[in-house]
Image 1: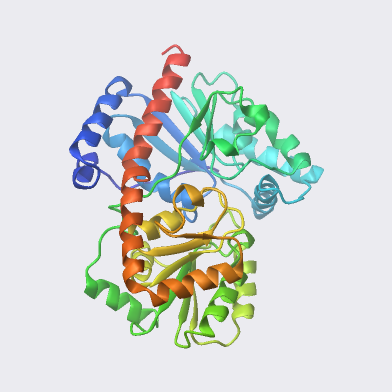
Image 2: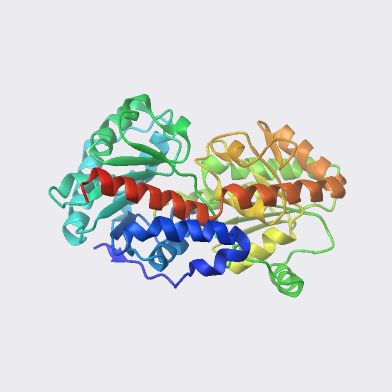
Length: 412
């Protein structure tokens, strides 16, 4: 059944140099009235994807300011995760009908997990569609429940949305990444807008010595003397990995020694990942300068992002795009799809470039490769934008504000 996720300690005081002492003091003040309150986060996987990556660092940081916090992940069959992947795609707008037997699998899995999870907490935060129905099977638990939707829910496939929406409406509060993602029928509910964040001190984002970067680049077969463009994302149709290969091929016509690196994790809740990875391998063919990597360590991802000249994010739908945030933090110039939460991170022409087609992405990539000084300036502005808006300390403040509001509404 559901598993408790163990996380390493994380201390708020370590963020003073990055976030500033005033910010840290404000967080501690906000946490004073929440001392001893209990929180439970539940999602579908402990590895792979933005929610798991954020919880790995946010859960222990919330503990450090005096709350009692646990994180659990669902237990589910391959059939369950196949169904929830279809559900995920349908909420993005794809016409995916959920069959009656799939609905039964979804509800049975949620009920079995609900029976095994201790929900006697002040605040319960359920992440994304997979565990959304847990709330149906936990009447009278006494806590305040919030559903955290990490995806763009603005234009769901209506038939499938009708299946999920009754569960969503049972929550005490809803959390979305952007106001634009909130369906009109949900706007009467208490809604918090909490964009995702990165941890600047994590293995994936901390500053690295040149020797560390060079060692990892060599290990992964990348030539450090030649230009490199990189995309870090799941192998997923919404990230358009085949389109990334097209961008590379277009740009390579003019920069003949260009290299392409694609890095993706195989999350346990994404059964399509292996399928799209294989499809990308076939599409890339025998080109020795296309490097396809999976399940690298966070340190390796960090180093390879820092070694890249340009970072791509060719998303066609994107809830937010934490890999964009990571690249901006590392002062990389990013060319990304003009979709979802990406425009909240990139101001076109200042902190990166927003594009709508393969040709545009290739043209902007070529321009950046040919203008290293401008590329550096864009990277510096991008870093500062992330520092001001998308660090984990801001994320913690947002959650503390939510918990304080839930406590008031719950009468506690």
